[in-house]
Length: 333
Ligand code: ATP
Ligand code: MG
Image (cartoon, rainbow, N blue to C red):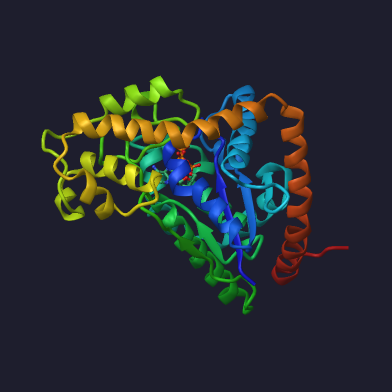
């Protein structure tokens, strides 16, 4: 039976990248009638420092973002990771399965640890083992993510395969990364070769889901581009990362292919295209940010939704963790 799992870190405010690469597609999955499990991964967020009060606020805001993007907490299971202790418990088992060399090859580790890796947290290094636990705890088969998380889902498959092999079982399924749409990798507005991220220190690099119309228009107006007009086909965007990024965003927001967008927009200057993109972004994002603001007025209700989601998550996770412990040889009495 297919089951979808995915998560987002409450490590800051949601960006347009999170929306197009993840949230928008989470809601589509739910509409397909598949069982969907969505997680606010607070334990991942603290692999880099988070102020406790900010973490609480970001967790509630992200939950509001899920719901405002169309995740129905009755249809999907929506909860925060730390309320289901099985995630940490299975992650420990996987810490003993995964190899140091596998972790060292992860590009997210290399990017986030930077030059001063000796000072990065041990949790940041082990991040992919916790992510494997998130997915495999539900025997999830599909993992909708942005392009940047593909490597971690592949590592999850390696962990599942090594566990099954080492213990001589056929217990964990091989999950598939599902990377679809015109914006699987939304780039920074300041540098078309760098991913847009909620944790980027530059606010001008990203569009936040909570930005108002003026802020969105200003950031798009200032977005880096080149002096050439828009080409007629997608091929003309090769070697033009900044231009390509803006066209990809337009295509994803309007549910069109890049070629369809360029058939209409080809030949226009960016001075003409950018205001059209800004209007489109405002039209798509403002209903969502309005709904997020409304939901945020009742934090107790958000906490109740997370608690109820955690109960439902545990119904799936507890038997799978127990079976894992049995396979490994842990006594339960
Ligand atoms: P951080 O900077 O803290 O890592 P983030 O913006 O990368 O934050 P995550 O919580 O790490 O967000 O990722 C949540 C989901 O959003 C993942 O599926 C990830 O692949 C997707 N995602 C993140 N950034 C982008 C992006 N720029 N384009 C498309 N998808 C993205
Ligand atoms: Mg990230």
